[in-house]
Amino acid sequence: MAYRIEVGFKEKIRDALGEKIKKRIIEDLNIPVSDVKTIDVYTIDADLSKEQLIFLCQNLFSDPVI
Image (cartoon, rainbow, N blue to C red; front, side):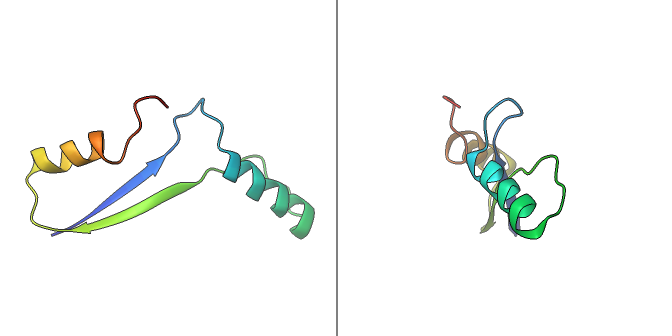
């Protein structure tokens, strides 16, 4: 089965890439934008139990420092 995992910053953490994209949209395209957030998306196609999937999400795809 294929699983989709989305990884992004917590609400109060600065998204530098999102800010850069926002600036380019405003300056290059002249489109008013209030906020841009970036998210990395991973697809894992494997037979995983719910426990294994949770373990991956909490340990491999997250940074406890951030």
